[in-house]
Length: 628
Image 1 (cartoon, one colour):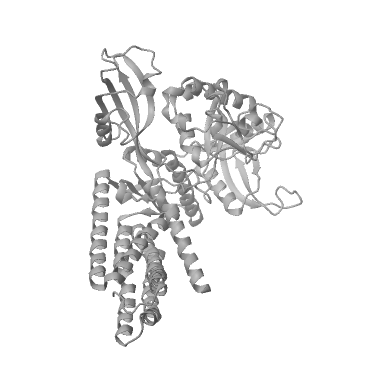
Image 2: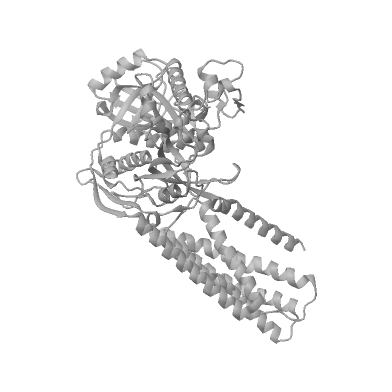
């Protein structure tokens, strides 16, 4: 009985987890982000909105608009006649003929999808690989022929770090950037269409700069200016309605509100009065973590969209710029630091002679036994660095590579000899990564593109249709065979098969894996293998029934006799999949991942789930026969 309870709990947990990760895929709605202008019958502009997230199927501006925007390509403009929603009409100050359709002009900026579910549901999505959604495939080679072994290795690591930083600027979903040999780097950019921009950005010379962090007064002016602009232009940017406007810890820190201590985890107070409505649109996106400003992952897209607006860049106080910190490789979906810096470059990478990782000696608690980064500047750089550090004690000096801030250490004292230390609670790997970034400003080895491949979105769409069509046909054939040949027992196996496919999709989503064509092939293969276990079990049950055993005994013995054979077959296949993943490259790894997940899921559904169903059928009442 205890065993049955444990099995029941396991089944419930597995299906709840599957439901948790799959429901967002079902609840996802497609949106087209558009710039929309509406004109009346006299061609007078009566309404304008920038980057509105238009829900496909909503018919907000009429069915003709909906159909046109659905089939438009990125960058296309459309002009249709349609009706204006009542909530928009009520806010217009111009006279229009309410009985006539208006002229609606729209330009498609991008497409996106949103999950319309409670906030506590999973935010993870099943990503599509390069071969399914289109994009770019680049093979890069670092020219290390004239370098020593140590310098060559350092150059490749530096190039890898620079490329990661630059790819981050594209905002590409799930890019693949990996070293595949001693001097080659594979870059895959799903969804990216602009090949020339990608090549130009990846191939340009690294730009390493040192900029001072802005003081609180200038940060306050910047935040207030952006908040004020967004408040006054709220109706122009539809996506501002997504911001959960709050009086944040940022304002408490900057505007010197002493009542509460700065705490990034503290609950905030919603702004609810009419006078304060839309007062905190920008500052609400920023939180405080320790001594840093951070942007939470759910606010990242909106934050980057706002700071990239030309209008916002124009109203930021002169001399101030807003840059993002680097992605934490241990938590790529976590918070990102944000820095307010002065745009004056105090020093560049051209003045840096070397950057090395060292272990601190002596009794100083900041460095003793801890890794730190040692910097050495050339003669010109030493003079500049001495002046900067002398004039800006206790201020932060940001290390910026390709517009990404990698570190912003505090200047402790004037440094006269051109030798500096960057200390902090670094791990050895973090210190090495920072040294690589600093050295990257003077990369001694060029990076060449030796292979380039672009996959169009239409080819990706065809691949998706063909792959899912094959999977669906395979699933239908297998289910029909099991239903005809094994009757009611076959129907139970079919339910287990469908559950198996759902579990595979849920696990892929949970692992943030990208679904590729080889991955679909692995799922199709799993469909065939999944019922193999049930075929073995059902044949053993038939043998037991022919020998005169009762239904309950026949089912129990059938599972016991088949389970060893099933385990042997699946374990050997699983070992093969693990070897493929370990030694294979991209497509082969995708196949190995889905195959491995499919094997484990099929063993669970074929053995645990179907046995629970049979027990439920048999134990409720005595049966003299079984449909098998």
